[in-house]
Image (cartoon, rainbow, N blue to C red; front, side):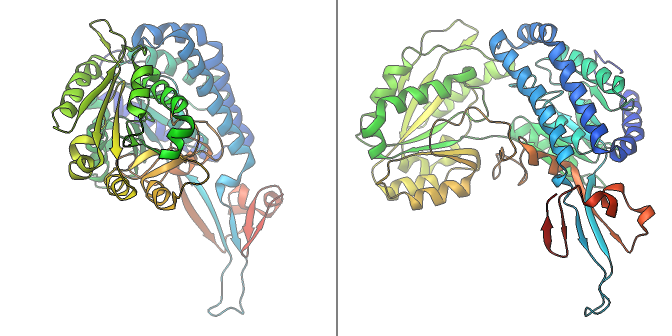
Amino acid sequence: MTTLTATTTVEQLDALAQAAEAAAPVWRAADAATRASWLRAAADALDAAIDELVAIADEETRLGETRLRGEVGRTSGQLRLFATVVEEGSYLELTIDDADPSATPPRPELRRMLTGVGPVAVFSASNFPFAFSVAGGDTASALAAGNPVIVKAHSGHPRLSERTAEVVAAALVAAGAPEGSLTLVTGREAGNALVQHPVIQAAGFTGSVAGGRALFDLASGRPDPIPFYGELGSVNPVVLTPAAVIARGEALAQGLVGSFTLGVGQFCTKPGVVFVPEGAGFEALVAGFAAGAAGGPLLTDRITDAFPSGIAHLEADPSVAIVAQGLPAADDAARPVVLSTDAAAVAARPETLLEECFGPVTLLVRYASQDDLLAALRAVPGSLTATLHSEDGDEVDDVLAVLERRAGRVLFAGWPTGVAVTWSQHHGGPWPATTSLHTSVGATAIRRFLRPVVFQDAPERLLPPVLRESALAALPHRRNGVLRVP
């Protein structure tokens, strides 16, 4: 493992890329049991190094030991999830059409599967220094798909990035994976060069709209454009019906405050805009809970500097008022803020009022009628989540239809902060939430780093092992249109 404490040079990047290119065929050819064992070895190494890694992470991010230990568990857990995905085999989408000379036109034998795209670039996020960083979901899913990974370290936790890469890379090699399976680059210039390097075949990113769009354009502008899977901005709209506020307004207010201040408002699923019925008294309920809410230090100097300017940008709109503020905070910490506006203003000026503000702030949007609500909701940009709190008698079909078009995950209870890492999870949404239709969390995140290939009339001995008759009986596959599950 080559460790890099300064900005990665062009020559260093080339060397890492060549190592990844050499490792790619080994990963692609590894059978399910072998690849799964490599993933589990990485997970075990992270768990074994948890004390050391959490101490470094707390120094660099100030997120606290409890939060960080839980995040290491999530990170090793998703590596193990992808090991089971590899072993289960349905991700390969094995599909066979037997030859049929009597068909019009005659049909050849076709055998289709998904295979790894090749070396993948992963860009770490600031707000999850483990779960969306060096060994996070993008890396886990790319490795599971059979691809080496080169990670661009985040400047907010450089020492943690380097040490995590050392731990995981060593574990992979010790388990039998080739050198070059996981490496690290540092510096913005190296990140730009990474996404443009001809060896890289796909990229995953979690971060700002501006940063993600710049890298997206670089990936698309290559002589050989590559897919760029970016998770960008998200305001995560929430709708409360009048009946819901009457039935459980106090609990909803308490839940909202807990959610938008969780992690000092730095979760990508933070409820940033909440549509509330006019005259229902919900603002006062929120104010009561928000007054006792604590803020805290933000992750980086850039985020710290941007938070007050983001609040000022919203407050500059004539429709916006401050509903409440949380407990006073130290000079370098963010104080929770609740703002309010109305649905007509949101519908008229979404580019101002619906811009994501990273940190502990949420915007309450009053609506007087269903028409007001729908007009404002249609102005909401694509988001990772949308939440609807309603009662059984509410007529919410039209509202739900808009929310479903705006988000990748729709909640009907609870709050969107907190993303379960499961087979069915979807963590994505329409632009600008993501640059694609795929998820960055859950089993199907692996699909981003796979490409289809079909073998026509291939001799059995030349087929990939998983497409041979001896293997198909033990793997999910579709044959002549019929799904077969062992």
